[in-house]
Image (cartoon, rainbow, N blue to C red; front, side, top):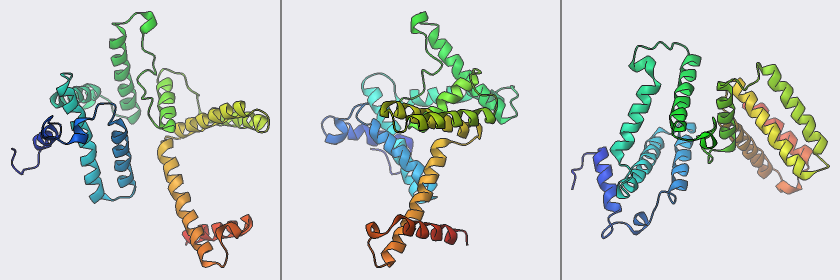
Amino acid sequence: MLNDKSSIEKLRWIMAQLRDPENGCPWDIKQTFSSIVSHTIEEAYEVADAIEQQDYVELKKELGDLLFQVIFYSQLGEEEKLFGFDDVVEAVCEKLIRRHPHVFSDASLSTGAEIKANWENEKAKERELKNNTKNDEERLSILADIPKNLPALSQAAKIQKRCSHVGFDWDNVDDVFAKIEEEVQEVKAELHRDQMALSEELGDLLFAVVNLCRHAKEDPETILRKANQKFTKRFQSVESKVNQSSKAFTDHKLDELEVYWQEVKQEESK
């Protein structure tokens, strides 16, 4: 048994004990690569939430939970003789050194744009190496390695960034605005006519707005989360005002609630 000193080896030892077929935890023993994916996604969101709340005590704990997910996958990989934790570390070290030639070699990349371009170029090389072993019908798309389980806004931004890297992009932000205006008109045209077409046009409009976020150098997932938080905070303040009144929420008319909403906004600006 390892001593009490905290280390990655101690964590790996704990994981091995949890998966021990005879004396381990029944829940951990029955898990597979697929079954813990949802837990990994949940842990990543909890890390993001702790950062947004600036709760660094909680962040330390959430990062530990996320690290444990890596250890769990590595243990499964070792058991199935696919890969181990050391292989995971070796792979990421090789990738980071190769994708940062301006740090680990003599390459000169001075601007953020150059660094991002190099990063995309390296990923393109990785796809090309995989394609060298395939025939024309099996060749990987430029978009092939974008995770399908990403939140839709983040996935849209990645798709657009990947296309932009090969020149498939609007030249300036005015073109993006024009596309949004075009999509708004198409949504209006289908609003009371064809529900299926409306759904498709709304998707196109959202995709175009994500493009605007990207051209403005903003992450759509992050700014929408912030907007959600701002709305939630304001709505809860409206609820507080409703609770102080003599009427239930549903007994208020919309214009009365709007008065509360405007009061909340004015109070925020003081």
